[in-house]
Image (cartoon, rainbow, N blue to C red):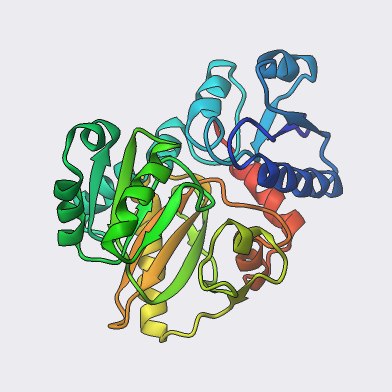
Amino acid sequence: MSPKIGVLLGGRSAEREVSLRTGEAIHQALLENGYDAVKIDVDVNIVENLKQHGIELAFIALHGKYGEDGAIQGMLEMLHIPYTGSDVLASAIAMNKIATKKILLAEGIPNPDFCVVSSRTYQEAAMPDLEQKIIELGLPVVIKAPTQGSTIGITFVHVKDGIKAGLEEAFKYDSNALVEKMVPGIEITAAVLGNEDPQVLPLIEIVSNTGVYDYEAKYTVGMSEHIIPPRVSMAIQDKISALARQTYLALGCRGLSRVDFMVDSAGQPCVLEVNTIPGMTETSLFPDAARAAGISFPVLVKKLVQLAGG
């Protein structure tokens, strides 16, 4: 007997609109598979809604805060409702880019050089001192809000004069700003599927028509190209796949995740970030990678239900 599935979508994060599209696509695929599934927009009444619909398994289609960060996962565990994707700890770590980088460093997984600037330090320190610290990292840099996805709260800084505005943009979303050395090169993403013995799906090279794979490029049809296989040697592809699997296991991911890489001019890949609930819209990367592996979208969704834990 199949479980009654609740597709949790929407939510309160800055990525609400993308979540609604992801959730709609997943809901349709579940119906195609013959599951009894209902969409539930996540709000303060989520517990009552889950009980009212008699939900026996949650398919999490939320992005960003309160959905991808372990919060909803913890609530579902308290309700003894199994769910798709990573558990509380892996979700929380992957959502926080600073915590992710510390684990990558401990595991010897290459990632861009970085420093962290807290809003308190920003308030108390002299701006020239902060600028000097960031310049020592080596311009250009990327300044990020560490707990946001879909390139929200991110600034590409090429000159000293842009540092202040970049930090202030990050502080709109977080009390810390992650400052990373920008790695120019080829952007490649690895979709990983599975639990204890995960499978790395065919890699995808991302080319944005705007030059930056930002929110608009990600979610607007025709604004970016997905090239499969990527235009790098097989040796580099194998290295990326091995690093993606190592990263997935190091963070304790489950079900699915997407590991984003940059390959520099010397052919060295480094991990940019990990998405534990990647987008599942018509322009999204994960379904594209699955299709390249011969896995249709409905089959992928069914597989994720089968991989669900709690």
